[in-house]
Image (cartoon, rainbow, N blue to C red):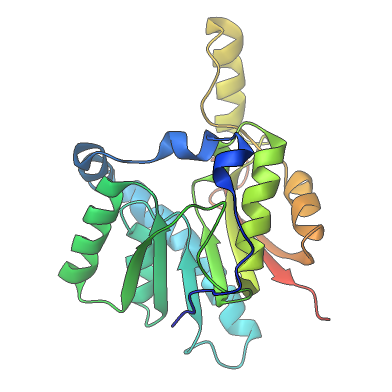
Length: 234
């Protein structure tokens, strides 16, 4: 399925001085269990978005049956299990003890071919180009600084052999406009940060990836998008 890297670049995360991505970690079991019982309608819509991206690469590739997939971060394992149920060897990573416990319980309950590891997205314990596909879902919009987004994306690209799916919140949607209006009225800063597709393309271009396809949950209504990036041929 995967290779733990003996030659992984040294990651001195304690020296980076950044913890934005750790602020969303579900350490407590109560937090994780609450999230695992989120609205089922939203869950199905989100999994349908991921399925659209997987269907896209299945049309391109002759054989995806042996593809390995990394779900980073995996939270309570929603997408990890969804992809494993489609027959893919899937690995989920997270730092939250509560999230990991719930995810492992769900993997066992659903009897799927999935592994849940504890790992930091700034220092993943896998070899270069280890996974055929990496999914980063409902995460990047929690990072307020461009530098941190670049570093997370760089590490995800390092372990990705071919395709990287990343969700983001588009600024060009009714939902995003409502957030802007609410900020103007109340002065309250949203914890969810919108990213333009052009911004993400710049981060990925620096790592040798190009945009293949962009999927919107509901164009111009919901802000959630899932972009598919592919490693450029050498």
